Image (cartoon, rainbow, N blue to C red; front, side, top):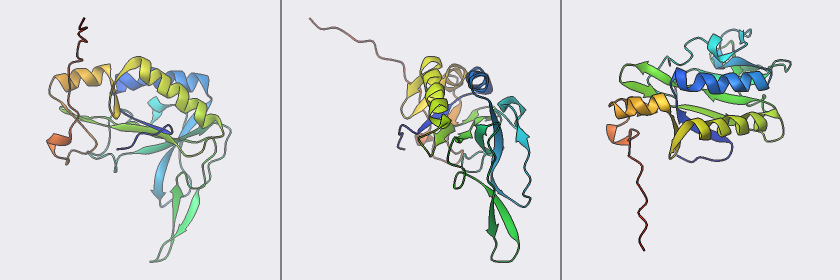
Length: 192
């Protein structure tokens, strides 16, 4: 997996991510909209991550099927795309295709059940607005509050679960050989 400057992937429990996201929400006046394809145009707006349904507890065992959210400034209007269907009717897309400026894509991940922790991700598509400041602040807090185990940042609680034998995964169906593996940091031996 490629990690570029416009995204960060992580394994964080609800306890790991809550202090980080609370700082972001205090510094930036933001709200959340669930991303995806919907049968109704009107979507609920969530003022804080802790108000999100299933925050820290993913709805799926695969991050490609878990809830995703667009974080944007409270005063910014969300653009919902009409998507005509081949069988007739219209579905409504809430995504980053038309919402690029000032928008941050979040997938929080978290504990699916005992023994299984799903990865999360933050990313941006543009580089000219508040989204860069949010990503930079989030990345700074990740560096201070987690351990980097390429290509993921692993929170303290998540690392304890990893040490206890939990699977840290992007998908429960992936082979266990692809799971995050805990390794003890090497001590540097100075040779004179």
